[in-house]
Length: 155
Image: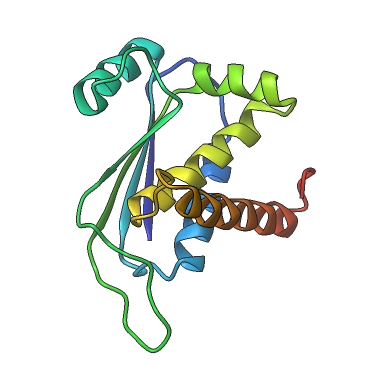
């Protein structure tokens, strides 16, 4: 699995941890080992442009996902599809505000948003209550097991 991190902001972050989380989530979701993912961190102005262009919504947002080959989670007994998973765009300054409101570190918020973004790339959504329950429970489970394996607080 290939994970590229493009940090176009002044925000200092642990890129290795973002890569480790991304690979962990993709492995847990049985994504093909040759799949590619790109994490791009942008400022609020760049995120707002993307948010307006792709979602027709004003202002910056925390995370956006851009699937490429529309890969889906692998299933038991089946070989996963090869291809490019896609791009996740994160906005650290929006994540920082959300982290402060939630009472946790910015890095934890970025891990949460990365997990959320990968699930979107794999076809998960939260438009309907049942979809939201499924996606958010899976997101919580993936993040907690990753943090527990890394010996991080919050697990």
